Amino acid sequence: MLSISTIWSNPGLYDFPVKAISAGLRKKAQEIKLLLLDVDGVLTDGGIYIDDRGVESKRFDVRDGQGITLLRRAGVEVGFVSGRSSGAVRQRARELGVKLVYQGVGEKAETYERIKRRTGLKNENIAYVGDDIMDIPILRAVGLAITVPNGWPGVRPLVDYVTEAKGGRGAVREISELIISTQDRRRI
Image 1 (tube, rainbow, N blue to C red):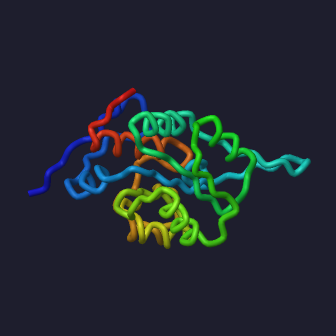
Image 2 (image 1 turned 60 degrees about the horizontal axis):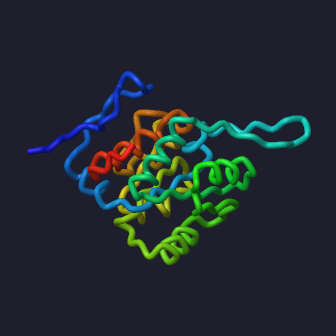
Image 3 (image 1 turned 60 degrees about the vertical axis):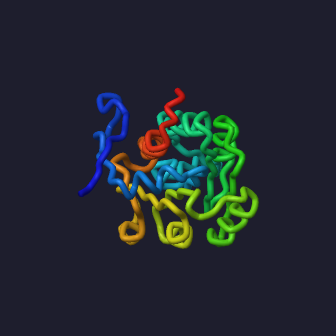
């Protein structure tokens, strides 16, 4: 028999419906102490804006930022792992108090191992949200693998959860509520 519970968000406030979660997903989410996020396509919509001077900017969703804040208040750390380097990402991390920020990463698996050594966490204590081929090594290793619906289809068979919300459009908020609700840490 499948045991199901529901993410506790108010569905009227978001672009995605409340989604039922299985007992297996709940068990994995209960163990999470660190949420690692790819940036382009997960924390942003994947678009890169470059002006005529070559200055790059990115669009971040306020709800995702609130989700990161809620996770940190609940005792779950957050980190960014990106193949690109961007001043906008450094600034967003500062605003949100995110200390684990790895940019310009060529080999994400090596960075993931470095993060595990730095934090002392095991695979089962780490969730990762990725949306493309570079994310596969981490998605295969973590305790809770997640992708977004607008990501590369090749990662879907490797993940435990596909968000209803798109990358850069509330996906991180959805994930934060999933983790917090399973750990019964609703400190808002």
